[in-house]
Image (tube, rainbow, N blue to C red; front, top):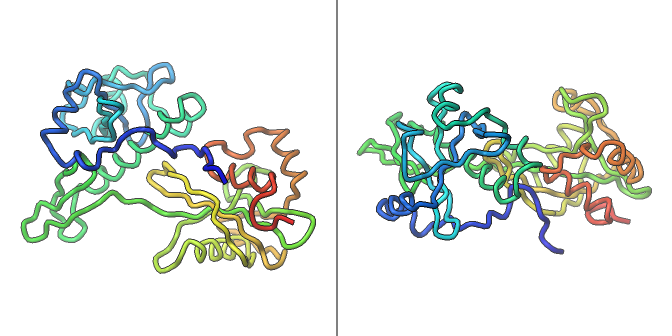
Length: 306
């Protein structure tokens, strides 16, 4: 099966893991004329005319007091990111010459795929830095290393290494046993009337991805799941998740929603889903792997294919 073109995946740049621990190399890359910095403010992208701002990396006046982190090499040029969250929004706009701050997911339809992937990468890394300024073991301030891909506790008696946190989650399209082919979708609390989506949830300590699928579906929809098959994964900027996509087959059709996460769940035929998409092309978010789970099932893939 060919690899799916999923949003926020497949960064076509070199992360230069073998070089980013060298401060002299980082300084030389940052000084290159074509190297740029992406400024973000509280997980939001700074934009001009709907286009993300990219500043020359060689000068630092726009982000005085903030430390850029290295993202990747684009050819010979460096791509960096800097977090301006310590100032208010108006000051962040003034420093960068931007017009507004925009959620990265809102930019997905209008920017090239590689750029949205880089923005998601920058968002996750900067979010981690903002929330990892102090050691969780001793409370001492942490210091940046490896171009921003490591923080180290500054206390001599601790010196704990702290790596960027990734939060794994599962997302699943559950199909009914037997014919006709049907899949399970739920309406989450707070969602608009008629807004159904695939089920998802975070992986807990001490469980496999498959265990997480079965637990989440049972907890939210009261549906008991049997066979579980992997489809694909997605780097998910919420802010730094890894969404792992599955198809699964229910052992029976009984539904009992938890009324905490879900307010409604039901089985849909392929014809019903196609009609919903035709009436509202945005019914399934195009930047979410959930879109691919549904699309691949409509094309005959996944558990429950008869």
